[in-house]
Amino acid sequence: MVPAAPIVVFGRSTTFTVLTLATVVMMATASGPSPLCPLYRERWDFSDTMVTVVFAVYVVGLLGALLTVGSLSDRLGRRPVLITALLPAAAGTAVFWTADGVLSLVVARVLQGVAIGTAMSGLASGPVESSPPGPTVTAVGTNVGLAADAAVVGPSWSSR
Image (cartoon, rainbow, N blue to C red):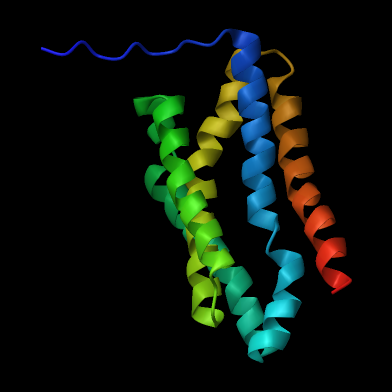
C-alpha cells in the first residue's frame, strides 16, 4: 500500500495571506473582461444587446454555483473547494484568450461566474476564521480585486 501524501498545514497568518490574495486574484479575473468588451464588439461587430448578454450570463453562472455548491466548503473544507474552483476559472481565462466570437465570450463568462460562485463562500469564510480583521480584509480584497484588473486592462487596451 502506498502511503498517502501528507497534507500541508499552513499557519493562521499564511492561510490568511493566501486567502486574501486568492480573493483579489479571483475577483480580478471576474472584472478583467469588462474593459475588453468594446474591443470584442468592434472586432466581431455584435450589438449592444449582445454585450449585455455577455455581462449577464456571468450572473447566471455565479448564482447557479452559489445556489448549488456555495456551501460545499463548509462540508468538504475550504482547500478542496477553492482548488476545484480554479478549474473553471482557468478554463474561462483560456476561452477568453482563444475567443473567436460572441459564443466564446458567453461561455467564458459563464465559466467565470461558476468559478467565483464556487469559490466565494470559502474565500469569504476563510479569512474570517483565520484572523480578527478577516471580515474587513474580505470586503476590501473583493473590491480591490474588482478594481485592479479593470484598472490594468482598461488603460493598456484602450490605447490600441
